[in-house]
Length: 284
Length: 198
Image (cartoon, rainbow over all chains, first blue to last red; front, side, top):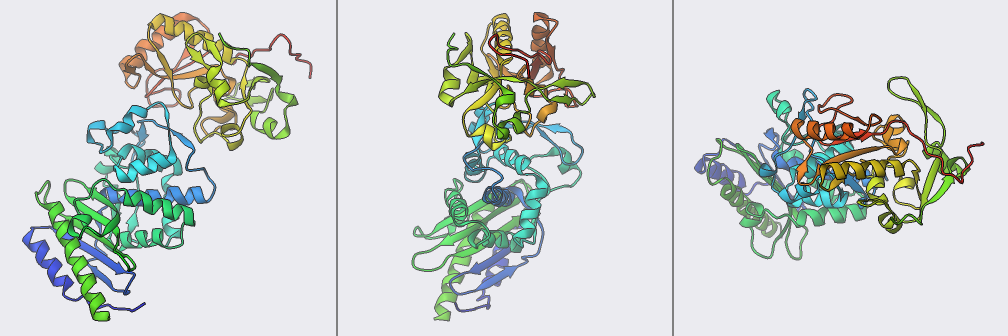
């Protein structure tokens, strides 16, 4: 593998995109496994992780399955009743605010852990996320991140926890941290079957208006988006024909509910893609 | 009612691996320090199909009262036979009366019927290990997830017998917030053909 570390004009291009789109901040990390090209633009800046944190939960769930704590086809009781990590207060998730409202029909019954993992990522289900995180435990998930040597991802709670939010207890991540999380998934941290299954779940992502939108049709992306009022992120492993994939994390912060956020992430994705191709050509 | 599959067995004659989990007849102190004896007599269930076919009451199958999630220990979750305390018959009879009173389908949640003493929720200190408790999460089209609905159906349950206990709404210990917990106390049932001599 060649090792290339020249940014190839990518940093100026991304800075210009951020200015043009009035982003408050961007953080971008890239590792091309074909050439070894690594790039990081404010990769150590912390952002609200939004739904990208679900990838950390996914890693913990499959690690726990690898350790024999449960089987992925085991069933888990679906309840919409959670306790805040801040003060233990009861809270429920709103079906209207969840990208996978259909899971709420299973309340009171059971769902397979593998189905919940799929819903958590592909449909970004908040309910599935909190159920899985409650089951494996925040402390366990944090331990898994440490074992996987993932720095830059602070998993502190489930999603939509109002008590924690009020006290400023949020999930946070850096672009470099989320890149190392995806690298752990693609590496040998999980068993071969779990790794394949995790990547397959990420490939079946339903929300494709960011990283994939900036790529040609022959690219496939195993990825996870994350959006809240002020943040718009996408992190993924990009597969191109006849070469090793590249891994990227694109984190952005805007004024609340600003238009054109996804389009900017897609434009960053396109710029990264062009840079990866340029670097590959230069290396040859 | 289809109950011909029900085979009562004495728990203390089970294999060691099952006895270790079911703890038949063993004493257990509750959170309040009061000691009760765990169930000794069980029905042996050969498969999920059997559990679905065994109708304990006109509107309740055995499967509804023994469905648990992966918080149950592996041996008692994914392998058969399963063992359910004989008192499950009394619980089903009560639930049928409750259903008749509310005149609507009654839904028992996963983990909401019998749970073994090895189950991660409550374990042997939970009255669910006696097979006399049920968590009802829905009556008809009403989900029991607020104070109003839980109070309403709690009153109905309590009106059916002084032996019935139903937990109040709330999030503290001994309260429920997304289902109605009812139980018949620490009842035990010894089938006629079973001896209680040890």
